[in-house]
Length: 405
Image (cartoon, rainbow, N blue to C red; front, side, top):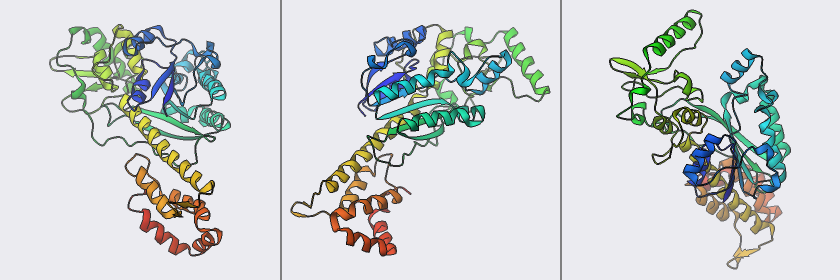
């Protein structure tokens, strides 16, 4: 996992995460000119524009395809808004909904060995689950074994932000092995930890806007709806609601309580912190554009842990491939002695024991019986299988202390 392409790149949150595990970006694409400006300020290059206008042949070969394709056609808020306006959503959205198939187009041509896609949680349930089935079917058709999970960034940052992540590994390049997504830290920063000590008065809500938001929330409360503002007390509250691209409109989803004054919006720098960007990340655009950009971004430390898990998985997979080659090529001896599958597997487990992708007992047993014929002969393998209980005792003795549950 040495190179990647950064599609629908935004301001480069995914790139930042993957570069932090030692991989190199060889191509980026982003069509928003303001996001391009922020991307250039931080990475020294302007991403290519609309991916629909870029031939696959013009994109360099790469190991991993990264894409947080536009979520508005699938998000709960986006679907609700489009329905109210009589506009199409999901794949029927002609502007953004069909961009997933641009990913398919590039995968068909470039065939990277791995991929990572990110979107809103409701992608799984959009159109009764049909949208997600189409996505899975297309990736499987292209020979990717996929793993997916909804992960909440809470624990990495003080924000409730559930997103679905899809990891895929190409069948031609990698063996079939389980993949474990990272677990969110049990304790993370609080809201108070990301707030600036001195904030310009312009971020405090006017009397008119504050009165409007309170009246709007009360109207919907009486109707039994959940619409309203999200007021955060930094002395008590640990997390905020989800930061969205519409934050520039009124900031209502995350308002910071102030003593003796109306609440205030977050500043752009606080939004950057809320998404896990480092302090040296430059913000060269207006507040309006910065709010849109961070609301559309990924949480950097969460994606970093996914990148690390993918790297560790490939360490594990490479070790299996090399092990299988040793036996498949008929290596009858090592240091002038017979190959022992138990020793080989034990070394394999030790190699990955301290990574985020340790072997499970099921995987170890399957590998053991796959390579045993090459080392001890078919009859010996059958004998071990016939003595199943004894074999399992041996396996547990060898591996249970360091294998994953």
